[in-house]
Image (tube, rainbow, N blue to C red; front, side, top):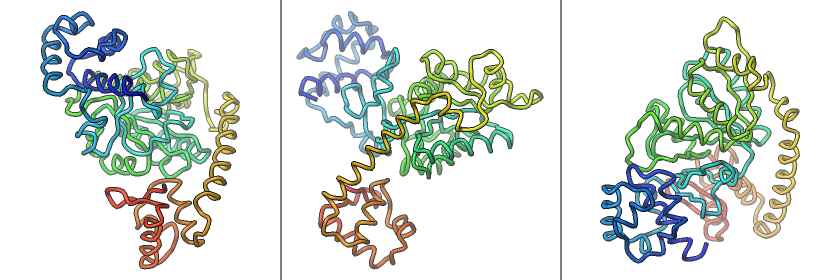
Length: 378
């Protein structure tokens, strides 16, 4: 990213965080090279679609904080331990660039590498039946075991079950939130929210300080569908949010699957209707995903081969001269960041010796201690 792109990126973020600024206004600002101007007038900004009151606020903000001299990561994001992704960032998910209006700004907290893995969404009602809970957990666990990332919306019910089941597998999980990245919704999912921040990925389009409103749920559902190669609807009534996600998936030409349910259950009205109308394929086991999407299995095999090659290269470059226990710790940390307690549990190395090994690896610049007492591999 060159200096001009850095400046444009900062302008996008500054515009995006102004209340009432929409996707098209930012698009016009980028296309009109507004970021090249040394100063703005209200007329410059109304010409790209801002209301006069919005333009006046933007002019004053630019006078106080010209983005040409601001930091890449605003203080709110640093305080929340999150990062900002725009289309100018290398780690911006490529799959989002394919949709009609890619998000200008994403706030992310956790394992950004999950954005580059094949993902499938699992969505459903907030009040599932026992059948729905079991199905969501089973399918999420199996997908994650195959190395496929499970995407959902951190809501109660089916979403929570999917996240919990996928979290410990190789694929991991992404929670797309309607609220800002520092705010858990619903509040009772706070434990899951924190766990995903450590071991999965939290993602949001919503700027800091934005109060919750209905439209944010629709935006959240749009991103869930856009990030995923396919969406699985487990349970949901005819007007449930899961069917909004299904609608987005169809509009984006993503594959759509639905789990059939009893005709007497209101919770199965949504998926049964999708199947009946030919909008979704009936799914009863995860292997059907690979039957319907054979290219996905090929992609997973290629990713595995590339991972094996990278691990071999990494081992040759970084593990020569290390003790077997040190190699074991680095291997664990390459999968995901871990605390000393988690490393103790996974490695069975006594605490005293483990602490000495970790200190030695930090000195050797093989690992690094992050805020929150979390270790990562370098």
